[in-house]
Length: 270
Image (cartoon, rainbow, N blue to C red; front, side, top):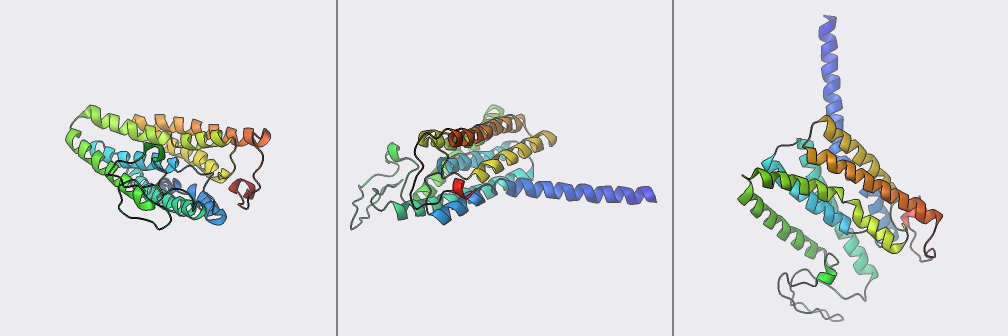
């Protein structure tokens, strides 16, 4: 009788732990962006956050969802991708709104052609997809980002549908998805290098990246996820530590004068 009760307790405990881990995997990836979102809203300054982080995560998670049609992986990872896509669109919407409000004299740029005219700013007429590569992913309106993501998704779905029977394509798709995600921190790494500072970047966000990526890589190993997942997870952790090193280096050896603008940066808030 005692053995039966003990087995039931162990079963319930196992189910509870599995549920907690699944919830952590699904929502853990978006938690680091909460402090960054709040900092941008509070300071009305998105200069320190690279929107290319959003581009990397959108591409990676769209490809990961398509990869599941060719090779099964854990359902929590699927939901993680869906939640992450929604989160990145929210971040893009915020960054675009803030930059439009603070850069009123900036030339408005679009992903697609437009016939609309602004009374103060003339927008050059362009054909669909005939955009300026110099301003790629630096458009003035959130709808242009949505159009770009939609075009990429449709093309990716079409190619995947045609080549889904190819094992080489499916495995390459999975590797490309997780490798792209592993490069998540590189836009922020480069942005910090260009600015010679980590001012405006949420240190909390990077710390959560590091802890989350470490946990996620361990989850990949324990659940025997496809090899592409945990290999690129390790690479992602290395990039996170490189950004943390930038925080230490630029705080100890400032490369440019500290900004005295009215914006209070997230780094100072910490």
